[in-house]
Length: 581
Image 1 (cartoon, rainbow, N blue to C red):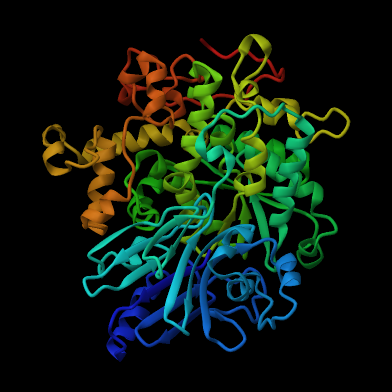
Image 2: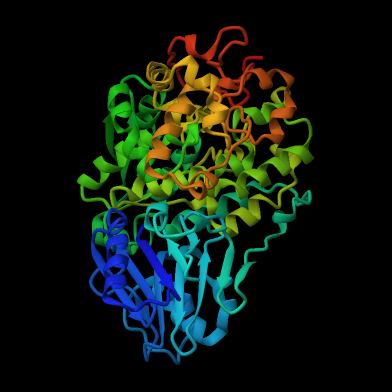
């Protein structure tokens, strides 16, 4: 992922201001180590830190239209750029970059072109003819983006908080699926899918339609001019991504450049569930598999760097980001610049273990809608920033616009977990890829129980974090927590510990407001906590907090901090395996 920074209408075109913009842009250099660019037009500045994935030789930014009256700084990948170029026959392109279409689309269609883009993106477009500008973010918020306002009336845009938090009077997360126009002075939503209203869909489940939609989502993400691989935890989602990639890689442009044997990557503590399952999947698919180990102490030592880069104090995000942060550094050291990952499936299909308690299909569907809408604050934030910290790009096919449309139009009754009918979590996805003649995965992997990433890397990882936090946060500190942190008051010592570190890096009130809060069990929204009365006394984002569901669940009586670390094997081979209740 690249890094973008823009300062617009700052009433200052001095050399000192240019130097300040360059200084702030360098804070994003980890995102784009391949090239730095800065364009200035009067008191408007567009800066870019490039991670070169498509057309590394000539795709440096900012990008322009033919006469350079329209300038764009972009972070993202436009998967349908070749199709869009065919619609722009009267335009001359300066580069082979997939993002080169944006300025020309604006010339042809004005501000209404954003929905034509199939991909992930954040961009700032400056029209120097009238000094107007637009800012847009992709549908789900896979790319990170923030907006801020200066006392001088300026508008600031940055891929990360650290690019603007010291210079803006107020700043906030730029909402996904929205465009900001200087002409109207506000936001409007460009992404308006049918599921957004949370109306209950009724399209009958067709496993082959779902399968084709996901295969298309994966194969379009094989667009690359640099070495790549897949993140493979051994769970259902990453294993399906790896299987489809391996199946369709042969014959692609990427295979001709870098070879047809897929590379896969996994991280975990010694003996963790993910390492064992990932190795089995890798052997089955014939990938070149890279297994990275870390210790609890390695993770604890990285926590401050993780919070600085991920820019959150959310407990579950930090737990999961740390192993991904460590793995990304190892992957980049091997010369790989892009990976395909499995984020988003659990939100779309109700895959988290708390969905076992969904009272009816209507509640299940509304909860999946809420989860997808919040992804930019959690898993997308983690996947984007944990990899970008080391100049690595993550692509997430489950969050493909067309695939989401297909998956969210299915009657949610088939997403309901019915143990008596052999339907475990994400049964509709498992069934779609349960092919006896040409199997995608071994049966017991296809029907492996959900493991959250922070659990799957090794259960003693979370237990170790809690123990470490308890050494640094006293009971007296917790007693006064609501006075020190009145907004999103931490309720555990682990949360307090992360909050202290975050506030040291980002002390502004605007910064703390960018992080979500509220009760959660096993990654649920606050609304879903109401599904089971027992959960209110066991609020923890770990999947093991789903009492009576997870095979290694916390029991109801023993405090979380006193739990022994556990390691479990994968599920039994049969699809209808009984889950503890």
